[in-house]
Length: 583
Image (cartoon, rainbow, N blue to C red; front, side, top):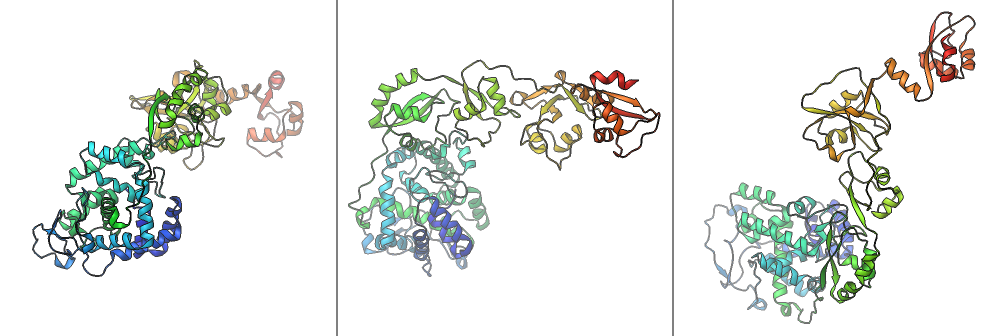
């Protein structure tokens, strides 16, 4: 998980010049005023950096805490104290309602609460966040309740994203819970060219619940779980092992125990949860939360354009897309039969009445999975269309490259068999290769191919591929080249555009049959001409309609070479002059 955009500014204490640019970029990315974001970061830093031991309990016992009070690094030899109860640390906090995540009264937390209560900027930010929480609060609480988790973990989303499902960090963390791609994949959030489920409020929240369940199952402590959500489980585990302690409060005080921003992050989640349970204490008694995002899931055919769906619901395409933020294109994924689309509740009846008619007029489409080595023009030919129409059908720009494995929407017709590449005769090195457990195939290079990417797909080494084809690993491959491969049985060749060895005739590069074949393709004959008295390069070029340069190139000598009688020179002559050249 990444650090929230505001708290990233806390790293100013270590690297102000570098973090300034990062903080500005992240603030702009999330629509936050840059100057205000930086100011808030500094204020929160000041609120947490109180000089004294901020973990020293304040007040008499009254509130249960989860762990023993933390120690300064110089106090590691002090005996551990038994868990105790703490009183409210200030009169204005007496009788305060507590969230269902455990808190600990220390100066960090109290200073932060005072900032959000007393500072005009702090009050403005917490009011905006709390107002926005109404959009997804019911859904998040229900999800966590069903998972048996503390419902107030919903304030993690407040700290991470301000409940914005479309937020993306410069590091690539995405959505309301700011999942990076790898962690999202671990919790079944799919990311492909059609959808990014990290942006789906419901799906990402279910993933967050599963993630928290795993973290708490491993750590057994909610403060530690919150810390791991921010800094990563592996990094936290290293700290636990280093200091031989599983006490978040101790780790937050020892030298290099936890990142300062992670300590602040945990306190901020606790502060937001406390404020939400006590709005009047923080001047939020008059706050009207945004209404819940009210939508109904409607099953519609995959591949349908958002424009058509929006017309059926009598709304704009942009408005429909905002209710389905996981969609990355103006079209539903074509690789599913039905897709659960969110329709605003007040539009559902209209949609259901109009959709059958619009669907009846809809052209049906199929799905094609792009194979390795296959171009869009190849797919277009298979389905009787053009590359331009295929790009339009799949919302692809003219320059956008499509990766192998991409599911493409195609016309719903019986595809033609893929055309066998035109070159049925391939030049190969004058060496033999034999493998008992490999299959001999040929691959036609397409624009953008690289030796290493081809080798990686076919599970061979780049050195092997270079040796099999006498190509250099330092130079680019070019469209029209044909590479021979000896592929392990583990490779599924259904996902690649290859030709089997039985469909190809091979000729050794530079051999007589190889050279004869290539001239035949140009309706020319390769002959060995015996030089006669008076023959010159110039006279031969005129007699056989060749250039002096081509004769010199074929024979590997200078264009100023003087021919000697009875010498042999090789000529590529038109077929109708072959007999004359042989005399």
